[in-house]
Image 1 (tube, rainbow, N blue to C red):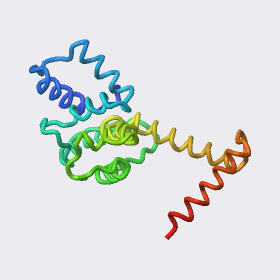
Image 2: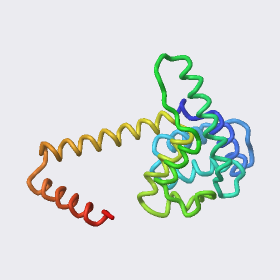
Image 3: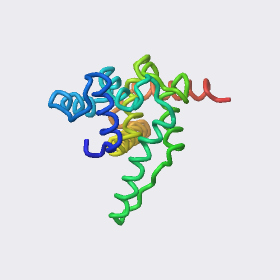
Image 4: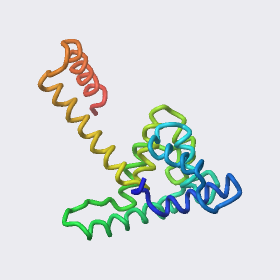
Length: 187
């Protein structure tokens, strides 16, 4: 959780508390547990609603580009500072690049005004919603997800090419699906 941007935590959690419990002072134990569980697993409706409310800084039920840019800028600035302390190279997406990636995956009804329904209407959106919030405020989790996705994809490709761990049926199904996908989606 230490990688979550300060703006996302202070503005979001305090805004969430003031809008829903009438106070904006401190974080009690119950609120901390709710935050912690929602941060660990962002694939549930409850956690996505929590993060949506935290990122909805004005409480109107809409995430705008301006609001999201403010949150991402804080994370971007922290990553720049962290990079100055290390010898490694870090490739950072600017806000427009990150939003393009996140919105393409989430596919909201309106890219300029994202609502909670854009995160919870379809089962696939539950997985993409957590990735969306991590991309804006928790780069460590975002990168971990991207690395895991890349590793999973490479492992599946390797298994497909070598046949390791695949039954004859699995190989047949993968080949048939690949042929079907290529013929269906080729222009």
